[in-house]
Picture (spheres, rainbow, N blue to C red):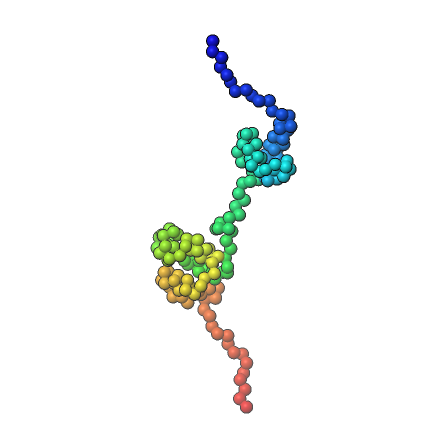
Amino acid sequence: MEKTTQPKKRKQNPLYQQRNEDIRHRSLVLGQSDADIAVAWGMREHTVRTVRWELGIRSSPADAPKNLNKRCHRLMTPVSTLHQQIGVKLDAHRNFVAKQAPVEFSHQMRMSYMRLRKMELGAWDFTLSELIKIADTVGIPLEELVRQANHPTWEPPKQTRKVSTH
């Protein structure tokens, strides 16, 4: 009869059991990050991640990304209403006239994808050469491109002072 050897279950030190349970509690219930737990227990973050892994906790809710990506389109705010209006015109031309994806259209305009997206959202402060390029691409005069919707035409202010002739 052959003797089969099974790995021995090591008896864990009660202090380690207490530490592991505290790490589980801090991670799952309190939602603390690995860094906070490491400071509380005086250990490295890597050790905390290893303990969590051994306990079957694959990720800590506190260590999840907070969507603070600066490139996130939802967080981009327009520079002004005029910038936003120019962006809407550019986006409408790309979608309905050119019928191109942003990446293809950005290559056509010889600019980066992110710059195009920022322009379409109004979060890019245009240079004069960029405005000329947009006007040529969209096919409208530059004056019409930069005309604000709430100020359809610009007129010089009328003089209200009378000029006296002595």
